[in-house]
Each structure stands twice: as structure tokens, then as C-alpha cells.
Image 1 (cartoon, helix red, strand yellow):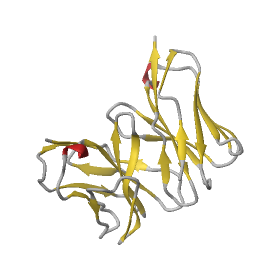
Image 2 (cartoon, each protein chain N blue to C red; image 1 turned 120 degrees about the horizontal axis):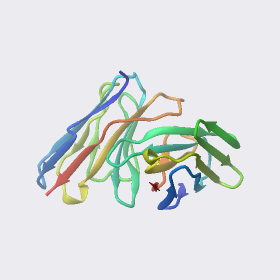
Image 3 (tube, helix red, strand yellow; image 1 turned 90 degrees about the vertical axis):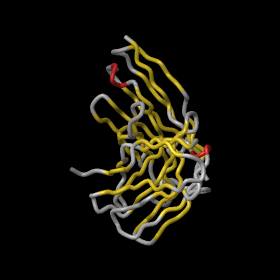
Length: 109
Length: 112
């Protein structure tokens, strides 16, 4: 089975940088995903990491350390529209990812 | 447009009245899955399917049934809905070996 842990809620200021952490414990590992979900809407894919290191995509970056069972999502130059839930999901050896409970990010002016 | 379509988007029903939530994808994806999302509990997987006629239980399958007779469709059936099945339901699909799940817009179900 899997155990995925991420903070329930975070707040940040428009224009700032925020880091959302995700720790996991799995018996196998075949990738870690981050999804963004605005209230009442469907989750949308943000990033995928399977090797250690940082993946950068515009204002968003995702980092993975497999030995530590740790990932973070870094959001730069925060905008009000970044207020959403951020879901960490981990895939073991099958195709099926398991989702954490999500981190609700509130961006204020 | 590549998409996952769920219907109905909103439904209020009563205990015991059988209902089906449909899910259809137009991307020829092998993998399809149903999730429910409840406050504080995140996305929990109900059932999934790796291909036609292949379905498996997820983490919370009790009270639900699914079928996968065609590649594009993966309906979720609640034979006798109960109030604890009031939730927001998402269908998702993905291509085997790919890394991205595409989600439907969600179906908000209320069971009175």
C-alpha cells in the first residue's frame, strides 16, 4: 500500500514563491504526479517525475528525491488564479496512481 | 476535442433508487477509472479498468458496480444508493504506459 502526506492548507501572497511538499511511502515506485484542481472542477495534470531532480515548466517546478520519498511543487510569481488544490499522486509498479488528500493553496493580494 | 464526458453533472435522488453515471472518452484510451472526492479525504478510487472486459476494485468499491463492454464507455452503477454515497464523482482515462490522466468535469450526486 501507499501512504502519501501533504499539508492540508497553505496561504501565500500574490507575486511570492510557495513550496508544497509531499512525502510518500511505497513498496515500489513508478512515478510521482502533481495535479491542480480548482474548486468544483476536474483535476488537471501539472507535472510528472520519475527520476531524481528538478523538472521546470514555466512558473511551476517539481522536485523528486526517491531515496527520501519526497517531492515538492514550487510555484513562482504567484497569481490569484493559482488559488486551488494541489494533488500529489504516486504510482507503484502498476499503471494506477494513488492520490494524496491535496493541499488547498490560498493566494491573497 | 479530446475529452472525457460524464453525465449527469448533477443529480439528486432518493435512497434505493438505482442510478447510472455514464462516462465516455474519445481518445481511444485503454485505462479508465472512477473516483469519489469528499471533503478532507481527497480522491479515492472506486473501480478501474485496464481494457475492455477487464475491471478491478479500487480502494472504496462497496455499493458500486462498473462495466467495460466497449473501450470508450465506463459506466458507474449504484444499484441501491445510500446517503453515504453523496459525493463528487470523477471519471478519468489514460493511455497505457502514458503518464497523464484526463478527468471528466465531475458528477455531483446527492442521495436523500
